[in-house]
Length: 246
Image (cartoon, rainbow, N blue to C red; front, side, top):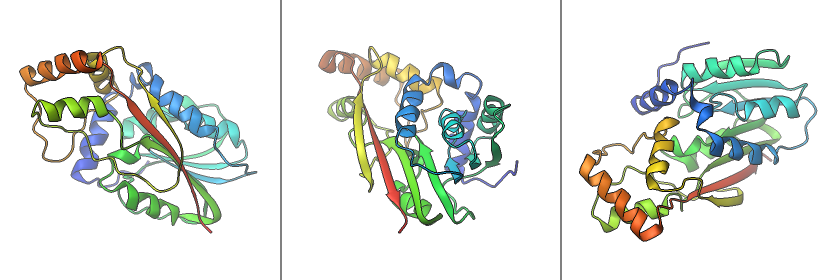
């Protein structure tokens, strides 16, 4: 595997996720469900050239290999630990696999791909809309870009409480992305504390740039208010998109 120079933000995100690589799938039932739904949208291809961005431990990768046994796969992630976990999980698959440590925020050199896929990664990039258009340019004519990511309504209850209480929010900006074909709203956690524990367990607590973390007292206040106003519910808004290159 190559070791590219990552931007500061990408390196911080990679470190957080890499630190959880060994236990990630224990807590990633939501991400696994999203990967399964995205896989159901895969186009029919005989032997596609596939680039996956943010492969993680391989929740979607395993489904790609099963769907396209004759495909050629380049599986990438910014965290070397995630790449190694993905390699282990796909060991013995017999698929034509290549792995690369890659910063999805940087320009990739791969062209004429039949399929570019990414699940639950776009929201970590500074400009998801521009990134989607950049990824599409790596496709061959007729190629398909498929993505799943957080939608604009994600964590609406939590963000509402922080605003009402005058507390700082580290939630990244979640713009509307072109090409969305399906969406869902999920409430997988029993209360707001469980929501925060889930985020921490999978490494998903990288805040927006310049964010000053809440104090312990502020965090407890936000949790109490979320439980009072919304019964502890924090909703995940997941969007699924498809774009083609003409």
